[in-house]
Length: 514
Image (tube, rainbow, N blue to C red):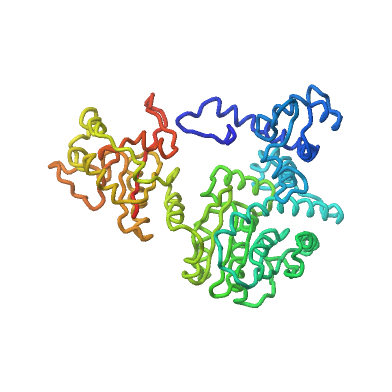
């Protein structure tokens, strides 16, 4: 993770701001190296800095410094006086490699011009720079450049999607709307050899699509249709086993994409799948928010949508969905079908589906933890008894489970989730109850949550010490003998004692599942 991505609320300070301000240093280095084919030149064998400087007609001293900087980014390595590509650079930054990302990365440089007009876009309420399409040759060159850039990304992304559909398609047809290079469909066709595809895109795009599908040796299994997906496109209803919308939702307005989703639903087979791949506000939220601004700067109506809105549109068209499934990278998928049994056949672990649902309730992070990794210590309740003004309150020691009772309870569970949130306490505890209820409704009938702090659900505790809200009251982690610091660190969270009253506060809850 790059320094400017490593935001930790309990530690953020001037250094984080400095890292944000210098973030462009990283991208400019990468752009420069790619523009001069540096990684491709180094692919056959390593070179000394002087050899590379001579090859590129660069200053030797500057070249040495540049190569050292690329080493610091993990893109080059230095051994016995020679610089060579790391595995990362060799796989993704060398021209001709299957998953080459160079064209996509340099397209980001092309977009940077628009970002320098951000203030003017904010004043105008949207895009202010428009390209003159009068020169048809220039237009085609730009389309080709864009399609190839997106192909770089799509070739890698589809490999994250295919495992979800493992073993599902013996045959059938795929329809991809706004197909671009057709890389998503091509990935499925390579994995499912008895399937065929139809790719739909604009008249100017389809020639490039055909060219790229031919390069992949799939031209005999693919048909092409020139159409604007916002207008009428003639395809028979209930025909397709898989309909794909990849990076299409973000390109249009709510009204426009609602129409596209409606049309897509009509051409699905009863047990077919609609695969929506895109950026969504809930997944990788920093990247999603920045991508939304990128759409604001560079498109007419584009934006990043919340996944919940897309799910609602699918429901209006009679489709059930998985909800958002984050991919390992910065995008996610929503998969829909008319039949819930079709969704059950997807290769998605039930606990993974649950994690996504709970994360989107409003928690900052949701991380799996095995109950055996929860640290329980006999000293913990002492901090409640000596040092906490809420000691003796209902749901607090001595009325909460003892460490020994907690050990016995956890022994009856095989799974757990650690949920990170923040104050106010009452809001966090209500959220923890929602998480417990969500798990119960997902089939985890033993779901039980331990939350943070003394119970704050009611405005005032019963004066006689008898809880009047036992339905919703839950014990705290610390009040039950759980060492929150050790447990959180065991699960990979950063957590430290607060040094000042205005330090950022983190709350944790433990949700047990079975």
